[in-house]
Figure (cartoon, rainbow, N blue to C red):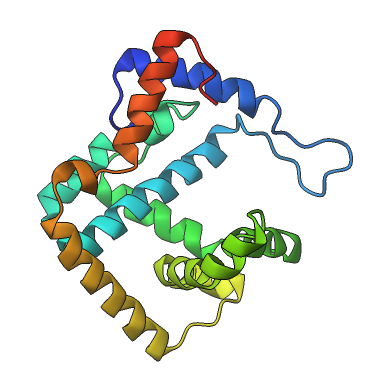
Length: 207
């Protein structure tokens, strides 16, 4: 969505749409949902954009307001590559920030969703060796990156000491990141884009 050409976006839209067609509620579902719902897709895209900008600021330092606005406009395809209409994407950074704060303030996580997300956070879907080795670290980093409102809804514990440790970790990683060649800093996104283009050329499944 961010790095591909228009034609590549079309290829991926078709592939994702085929998968999304299966993601919908049925008569037994507690909540009605449909992966083609543009409002839900807008929130997902907003979360991706917020994650990008938050990580960039933590690793590379804050951008100017003009740079933030320019990057925000570039991020529109995170939503519009799928079913989000152009006019649904908040018009500018001020509008986005209002949308984002409203979304966070109205966010509710119930017990079922919390249990599902906890399993993801603890890497319970992976081999036990990986889960027990990397699970605690993944939980720590995931919790650290979450906005406070989401952290509270997830009932994740987070102390001032945790915040200091997290900031120290990011500072160390940032120093290393600045020394790495661009091609390594862009990993794994550059590799994933290369694989995507290879799959398009060979007519292989994209999802």
